[in-house]
Length: 382
Ligand SMILES: NC(=O)c1ccc[n+]([C@@H]2O[C@H](COP(=O)([O-])OP(=O)(O)OC[C@H]3O[C@@H](n4cnc5c(N)ncnc54)[C@H](O)[C@@H]3O)[C@@H](O)[C@H]2O)c1
Image 1 (tube, rainbow, N blue to C red):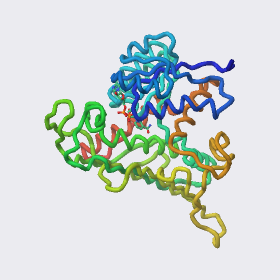
Image 2: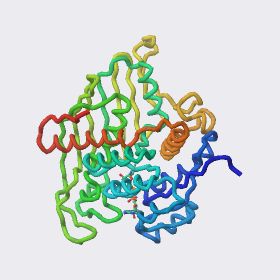
Image 3: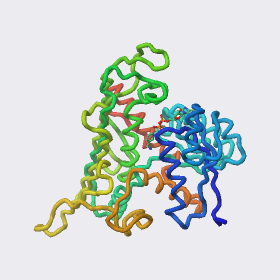
Image 4: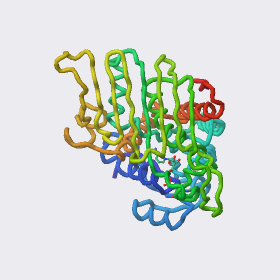
């Protein structure tokens, strides 16, 4: 018998993130041995019952629900993991908090700041443990970047440059809405690439370099009307297809952010570069186990960009995996986040980002959309 405490998971939404999280829940105890809690795949919930049953079968969930309210009402569920589209996060999270459940929620936290504030209030009033899945923080190379910055190796930071490029919505006859293309429907997604892609860049940026205080943005919707899957009719497109903004951080550094789904040839090109007084850092999701590092203090004859292969046991999380030299991938960022969350439950020191942290990202997203509309520099309130 395992001495670990079971943490019964009820996961809502068995799509892309449902798979990534189920994998993390199933794997975390195998690789992180000294955690007090062990996730148990207790129930999967999806509006599509056939899909949910097949998912339960594939991943070993003990039971299936089709109504998230019934899932939350169950006394055998400890934690609700929200992997449903953005317009479902608010209501599920508030009901789960009121039922005293631990809540893990996908990003973006909410459709907008006003919903996000209510969600933060609900978890703070009820005192339930909470976290939002901004998973890129837990890619070992990105965590290493954070450690390098915290050690002061970069010195004063001047620039932060980041983008997230995709190309899957260029076709004009691609419809909007429905189970596959809810990201193109503003009433479900809240926004376009600002909340879907840039939210990741913003979360990582503020984690690495502190608060963003003001933004100046432009957005564009390149295809103005698309057939809606549910109505079969052409309807205006309400999302931003591309979003670019300039930003100032509280520490005085300047930034550029860019995201689009119209960059032909790019599938998920998330990159970031930080330039400091002594050193610079570069990271690219397509090569996620490497960290680029340039240190001006190196002897001049050997000075140059290093490509650090982040696989050594003294690099973040890597002692839990294979031998040095063997790399890990995308899915491991979720395993790491779950491990940190479980450790936080054990120690009472919550893993970040919490709902309150994710609300700050939501504030920046909202300021970006506001700035694009008004064509004015816009404070984020941070
Ligand atoms: N952290 C990341 O990198 C990352 C990546 C992708 C998506 N996401 C976020 O995860 C969430 C889900 O995205 P996805 O790509 O997995 O979507 P998806 O379309 O692949 O899956 C969503 C699932 O939720 C189900 N669903 C919809 N409404 C529901 C409801 N009311 N109750 C129960 N089930 C419902 C759908 O049937 C579908 O199976 C979104 O908030 C998205 O922004 C985060």
